[in-house]
Length: 77
Image (cartoon, rainbow, N blue to C red):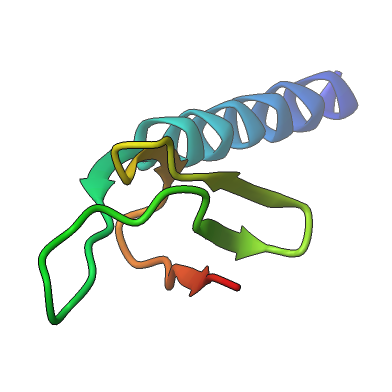
């Protein structure tokens, strides 16, 4: 019986942590522009990590889901 209670407590904790991770993510939407001219920069890579990223569209806009404290990396050729 105590193994069943321990398993239920473990499942509850995992569920709460998973819910917190999902709810703590926000979608960030922004525009990348040239610092000198203010012109939008298309096709700029925006990365969270090596396996998560996106590109800006032709208007320089992008949208990416991320945690509030994440550091974004921008690259452009």
